[in-house]
Image 1 (cartoon, rainbow, N blue to C red):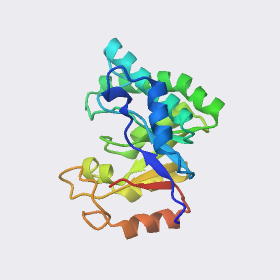
Image 2 (image 1 turned 90 degrees about the vertical axis):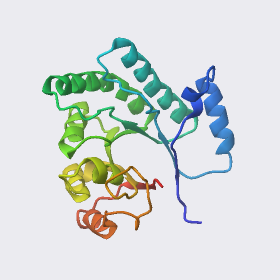
Image 3 (image 1 turned 30 degrees about the horizontal axis):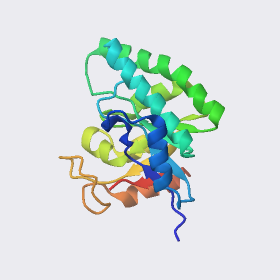
Length: 219
């Protein structure tokens, strides 16, 4: 009745030994057989780091990103959301190497989204300020690579900033949002009224700057 879409937040592929991409697509297609609205897929993220200094860990993580894209394409999702994999290190050399590996992978990977007319978005998790994700976005420089904003993660991990700071920094490149709340102690994924975030202020900021991302109530 509300014409809402859906975001698939978990892919069973990596949790079940022997399950293939084709098996996963089949399961999700069956589950979504009566759902005709827009579909978004959250890429696999548990223990995933495409910028790992360890070659084998990096390889399996990149494989999980590619598999997530294949699943999304198989279920006709138009957007795939990815975590950057950044864990909050404060070592300058490690951050520089992380960004280089991230960009090197995505400059090639984003071509698959361009060929398939799909959108990839990167979401903030442990990032403490918007410039980190904005720099990655600018270096990829593709119309099919956009920014996502998770309100609860800003509240929990980016204490020196406000959600409105991220909105203003991302501007029209803010394509997708995860909406949830917390009390800055745990990633609760609580409802809009159960936490310290003021969603009237957040929605006003979006309206004021004429920014209209898709939104997921991630609760």
